Structure formats: C-alpha cells, structure tokens
Image (cartoon, rainbow, N blue to C red; front, side):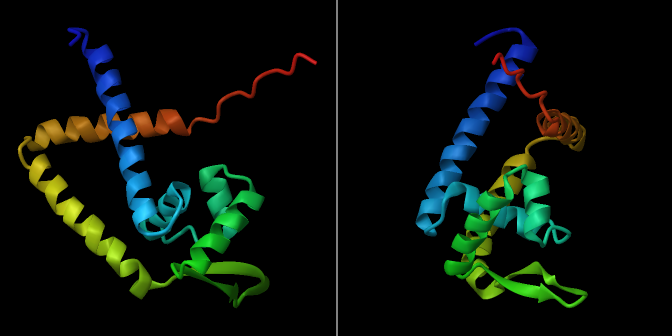
Length: 152
C-alpha cells in the first residue's frame, strides 16, 4: 500500500468503480437488462426532471439513436412506458412503471440499509469530507473532454 494519500485515494476510487460497475452488471443481468439500461433506469428514478429521450441524451451524452434503442429495451422489459406530452403531442414523456420497478427498489433498499450501516461507522465530519470529495470527483468526470484533433 502506498503512503501517498492522493495515490491511495485514486487507487481506492478506481477499485470502487470497477467493483460497482461489475456489480451493476450482475444486477442488470439478474433483471434482464444491460448495465447501461439499468443505470439509465436508476437515473430516471433519481431524477424526476429527466423524462424525455432528449433529456436522457443530454444528461448521459449518449446519442439519441442509442437512447431510443435503450428506451425500447426498457419499455419491452416493462420498466417504462412512452406517453405523449399533453402540451406538445410530438414530444415523448417517459413514465416509470412502479409495480415493475418495485423489485429493484426492494433490492437496492436492502443495499442502501447495508450502506447506511457501514456509513454510520464514520463521524458526520468524515462523511462530509467524503461527500464533498465525491461530489468534486463527479463534477470532474462530467467535464466534457476536448475531442481529439483529427490528423487527416
């Protein structure tokens, strides 16, 4: 283990990301989804302000064609339904199908309880530092990288 705290945090964060991604892939398979589908569904649960294909595309930076296919899969699996926006019938609004999402809520609810138990071993001050750090890391990764210059 390294003594450099920055390197230690970077390594721990990388290990956590790998573990989370692979864990989410297992959960997605269990519920008949792709990991991107599961994460987008999670986004819809967490963000009631994201309800259109365009909003999903903007938040995730996925192309709209990819989002359309993803929504097709979520709709086929019964997790969302497309409805027309009453203010603009050309616009599609996504509704969560709560009864079909309930098993995921139950699964993640148990995980949340376990996470809360683990977190309670740290002081509020420690958790505040962790939260500020993770929020900063999330902002860092949300930055739009400069596209590579074409050499053609």
